[in-house]
Length: 389
Ligand SMILES: Cc1cc2nc3c(=O)[nH]c(=O)nc-3n(C[C@H](O)[C@H](O)[C@H](O)COP(=O)(O)OP(=O)(O)OC[C@H]3O[C@@H](n4cnc5c(N)ncnc54)[C@H](O)[C@@H]3O)c2cc1C
Image (tube, rainbow, N blue to C red; front, side, top):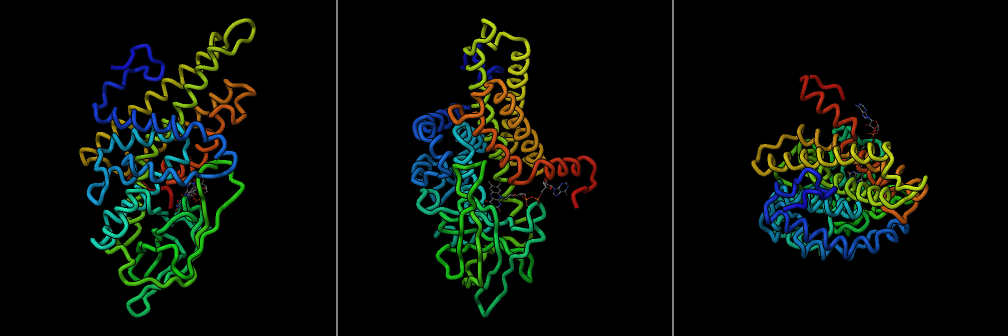
């Protein structure tokens, strides 16, 4: 039972989780404290992701965590959400790694792949021994992926895939790329081993956000793939969109982790930083900020939990996930900016986690559907009128 005066669990939401869910949360929280927090400032500053943690994440059952069979943990959606939250309380780069591996790469193989594809890729990916990336976005095609240029044509029984994918998380460290391409039959997903002739990946540098995460450009120059490289179970844009809906669910939770870390830092700072002879937390304006931050944090948690319970019942709809992503990332960003202000000048350094989370959340606001697109998906669900095309 949560301490009723715990500012990090103001509404005593802890009691809404099962023992098993709390155990997952506590395990990941302890791992983040042990393996992420001591190194994250350095990795963020250097622009590096410590890839060696992949096997740890696999050993904890966090890769493909909500999938069943093939060495996946088969956890429920709420446990997966709590794991995302705790990872992102460390850094969005770690949650992004797990989202891409599990929701964007393992999920389509698990859902749309052949038995042979599942056997080949899912067990090593669940162990963190094989890394995946998800290639949908292109230099000229972002929010409107149905207009992609990357194409695949048949050549005998083979496929030839050509095109460029941009902003691809884990691109240069991946063993397999799930590449979406236009074909005569519509959009299809291809499992491209990254050592295929004609495939190359180069990293995008000078990012000021998600620095502890690998982001790459993929070039596919007439990459020849066998017939069985295509995901047999899906044709059309619904293939990649269903993966995005899975990953967005993790973001709904993850964003609250970044927000919690910012709130916690701002609260501690406000209680100890003294100006005018008293803690800045004693001023009414600071208390209003803290009260609003706590309110949005608790509302966002309730929203995430509700969506998680719907998902576990098999009832969650993509437009509901959009509302969750829209709200929780927007509010997490507001919380991080408010926290940054409370820290004054100290808020602009890496000595505190706040500006790192704030900058990371700018990417989270954009990827997996921008805030505008999710707003328009909600608008379409409400009115029946599509405003984004
Ligand atoms: C760090 C990072 C990692 C990423 N990882 C991946 C990955 O692993 N795989 C992958 O495929 N992609 C990845 N992405 C790409 C991401 O999904 C895209 O950036 C995102 O979909 C938006 O596309 P865009 O950047 O081209 O923006 P655009 O689509 O060009 O949008 C620019 C602006 O216009 C607005 N806009 C667009 N259309 C409309 C409209 N109809 N109405 C109103 N406003 C509109 C957008 O909301 C946005 O504000 C990543 C991005 C980042 C930053």
